[in-house]
Length: 155
Image (cartoon, rainbow, N blue to C red; front, side, top):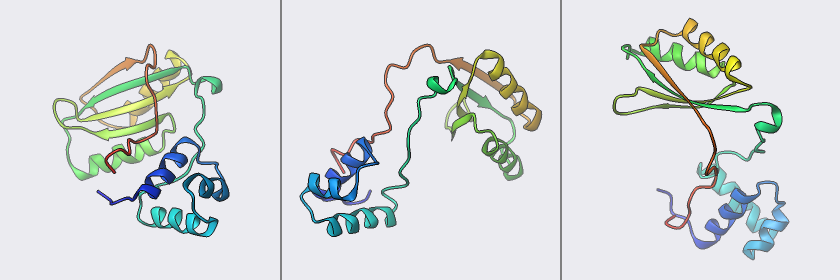
C-alpha cells in the first residue's frame, strides 16, 4: 500500500470525480500553488498511484445495450494456452475486463454487445480461437451501482 497524505487524498478524490480539471482548478481545491500541485500529480503518476486519466463513455448511448458477465472454465493451464487466450481477448475490444479467478471458475469476462445476436458473434469468435471447457454467460438486467472511484478513506 502506498502512503498518501491528506493533500494526495484530496487530489485523488478530485481527479477521480473529474480528470479534466486543470492543474489550476485542482490546486485551488487542495490549497496548493499550481507548480506544487503539478509536482504532486506527477509524483503520483510516477509512483503508479495514478495509472491513467480517461474519458468514460456511455455504452448505451453508443449502441452497446447488452452487458455480459461470462464465466469461463478450462482444463488447460499451460503458458502457451494462456498466452493465446490473452492475445485473443486483447484483440476483442468488446471484452472490457478479464480476470483470472480462484475457485470453480477459471476466468471472468465483462463483455459489451449491441444485442444478443452481436454477443453470439463475439462468443463464436472466442470459441473459434481458444479451446475452452465451458462458458456460462449471464446478461445484466439492470446496473444498480457502477463506479470507477476507489475508496480513499484508509489510504
